[in-house]
Length: 213
Length: 213
DNA sequence: CGCGTCATTGATGTGCATCAAGTGGTGTGG
DNA sequence: CCACACCACTTGATGCACATCAATGACGCG
Image (cartoon, rainbow over all chains, first blue to last red):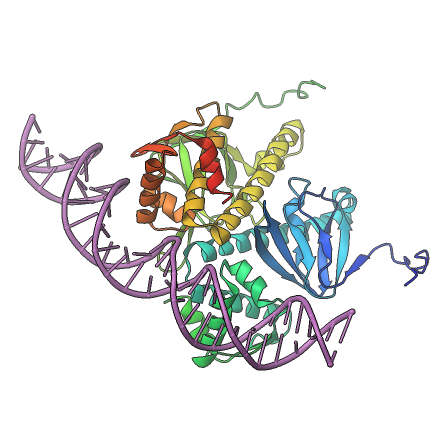
């Protein structure tokens, strides 16, 4: 498809945006940090790549979440960010953040808040990988998702997974078969209902209790 | 460039320091962030605490490392920091960091550098817990220690562990028996030599190869 | 429509946890 | 200074949670 000239599009200098198709990369590990991003719609994963295709998903991001904070301190991104469905982000170039003024002060407030939330999130992840059973990991994952959907005004009990079983498994440090089996098991026990990517949390209390066993 | 600070600035207030005995806590999770710390001598661990005594060591810190960065964004500490041997830190109160001026600019440079190193470190930890075998975890741990000792001018091949097997195990997401067995196994294979807390790396190359298998 | 990806489920294997016993080092109080 | 308690560490025996291998069904997509 021949691209139409972009000259007319930018009427609002305020909101710089970028669209990505499923599988497209927003930024890559090692790249120079140029901007922060806020997810407008869609979802992303961040991947840590290492020698010989070893890879680990370090987080999932949905509407409202900020991406790219890992590069803020080093001025270099630590992970790859990839869209897991068709998505759009709002771009906040470094220049805007660094510039003095009211606008940047307001932004920096947001950035700080997000930064600390993501630090907390990282710690959760460490705890999860370091000391929880497979069952507990999946329960924690579902509870977390549920809360995040709720915070965005969606149902906390009934939602659509944007990521594959393989991606969940990578994030949780498990094999995809294990994840699949656990979904089935939770369903059998009547804690959740699953149909492929659609999940309904039938018994939230018992789900949270899995974490406390 | 070398301009001396203007006027009658407070004459370098002798760096603020604090000493801690083994087991003493420098700061605690949930506490309001008051200062950053740089380890002068000794070593620390950071612990993440959760309901019912579940706990996970998230990092070890030695001379030169900065502590407390986890609280910078949220203005609230995320972890406990505990001395694992008699130690001393240099205290950098928030006020100093926030104050405008050359001194704080220089400090903030350091802080940023440390911040990004620790983000990288966190990612290493995620990779370690999420996708490495027990053997690879211990190898990675030893290689990391070796590099850190080297960076401080100590021998990278011959050093003294400051932490117990149990602490190593917690950090690596393993049981202490497993760690102990792995030490013995590495020793049998002639990769390292161990006598309790003293470790000598006999064959650095083979140790690093464990990671690549 | 046919092919690749995603998912489920079963059979089997194994890496690490768990349980258990014993040694050695260290600090404490008699 | 020794006796004792306590903790760190090692090593063995056993079990289980999860990985691995394999077969099949269900979508979704070009």
